[in-house]
Image (cartoon, rainbow, N blue to C red; front, side):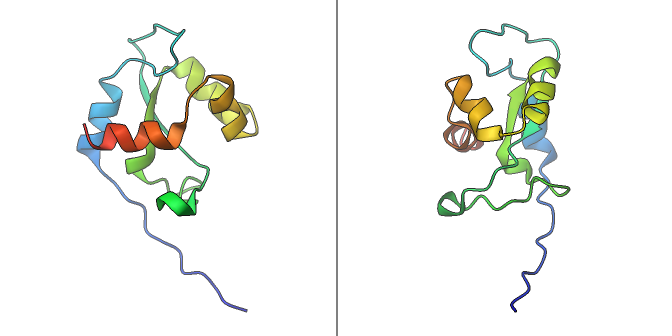
Length: 100
């Protein structure tokens, strides 16, 4: 059996401050007063996104959500279905925001 070594949390305060300065990324929301940095928890190995979100999030994969939508993201159960219901590819958005 091969054990996978746990990766350290990737922290980037400057990027999180930038994410929090943006309005909620849900198109129909309009709330730009309570933006939180919501970490994408689902992995996508092809894009280099490991499953760090569970207890050790990678700040590079944070997205701007208002408090209400951030709670929905966590409570929905299937994160990718939640993002799809909003018409958003969270991996593409996170990668785009990292380049901004």
